[in-house]
Image (cartoon, rainbow, N blue to C red; front, side, top):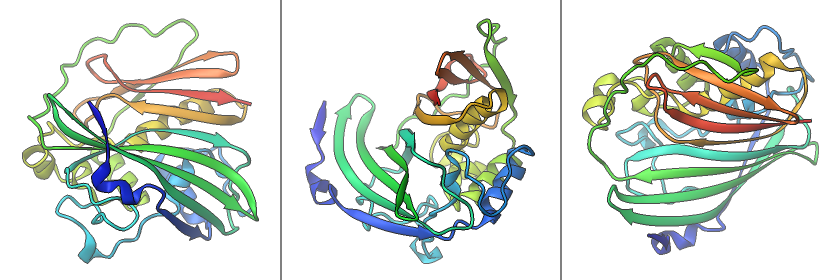
Length: 282
């Protein structure tokens, strides 16, 4: 059952502000990683939705990294001790693109902390709201869901199957999540979490069968599928992670347009939905 996160109630309402000069370098590196040769990224260009995740990065000193590679908690995020952490979902609304070459500010607030005890052990859910402001104008609003879990039994490797044909009219793309892609994305997001690059740690310490594909990477690839298939602007996006993906086999992205909305999912090699999402077109 869900319970108020009373042990962390003091963190609800806590705020932080982070500024970034919005230099073109991270966006150019992201475009190279995503094989994106279409998007103009010079000074004054608008940043594609979700690419703000390559900016406003936490720069924790090396001495403040935990054994798992995450920065130690207790400053902005509450000091939840459960080791398994997942960026479980988010909801975003674009008002105007962030512009490269001009400073911007991210305003964050802890909106809620809850805990849950069940058959799978104890969990904690943290909801964080963000506002992105540039030239005193609101550009983007985002609400993130972060889940922390106790250690659990090892996660079984998915059994690959022949995936069924996608629905008629669907957009599809197959992704090979090799170690080069995972390494570059970790570098782009300054993410030292060892489950994405340290195979012995991922297997023996956290019980995964292989390296874990970053949830934000999957979300960005889903939205990139939309951008590859329509020139209409994307004004809203939401996603929910349902199961981890690993570097053990390719996975498939599927997008099904329907008027102003596109239903999206990332399908694991076993055919199960690893992430569901929806994009709203302007």
